[in-house]
Length: 298
Ligand code: UTP
View 1 (spheres, rainbow, N blue to C red):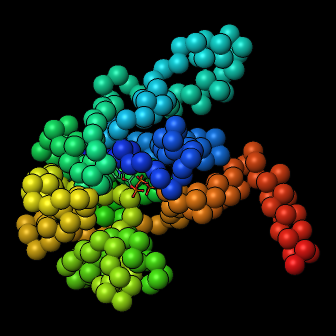
View 2 (cartoon, helix red, strand yellow):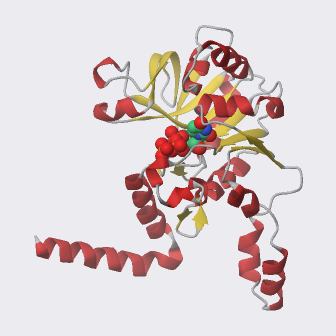
């Protein structure tokens, strides 16, 4: 199938992050640190690996730390250069964005994820685009969005990353109603946002990686005009089902951490800490001793 190359990605970061209050009173959630890098850096690296060259952030008040993070830091860089700290200068390189590669658009009110994506419509234009939610961090041999871009080259249409969740957890997610199950790829015949456990059409949950047709932006337009309250991205994608362009779920290979929740963030911290060669030995010993102490105390 002939599909257009995906070069633009939207990063909706305008949410209030209430689950991390009081920290998020003054720090954007996406700047919170997993080992030594902010959440947003993981998402950017994943997008770059998938061939993304234009990065669109949907921000809100109080997110200026994010803009500064991707800017150059002349004073810091010259100090590191003078001190001969080449390795640290290399580390900083990943945080720099070429002029013009990054764009910011404001969502004035937190009306939901669908509304946040809609705010980026003029920057996206008439081409397929990716959406990455930085609080979903995915550890994978091949980065998740890259896996999706490869699968999308076969399917076209719309693609959402999906994973099986326990039945009692489905009500926290958008859930797919499956028409055809082709293994890694499933074709959806429906999509429901946060269904009750006994009403969920499957246990295939949608997580924060999407490749979407620009038609979804038009759908968001209609939803915006038609409904009040939160504007759900799921509803706008679901409108494509049965139309010209199908909706596919992609079972990615990797481990997803919900860093929008405290438990998920802690799990990610442990997993990413243990995966780091420079920390592994000391950290593993510490965890081992801690668990032994806890067991002894029981
Ligand atoms: P969440 O549902 O995690 O909401 O949003 P939140 O505000 O970030 O966090 P809590 O629930 O209050 O703790 C999922 C993603 O959608 C973005 C968020 O920034 C996050 O990346 N989002 C959500 C927006 O950009 N705008 C919105 O109006 C809502």
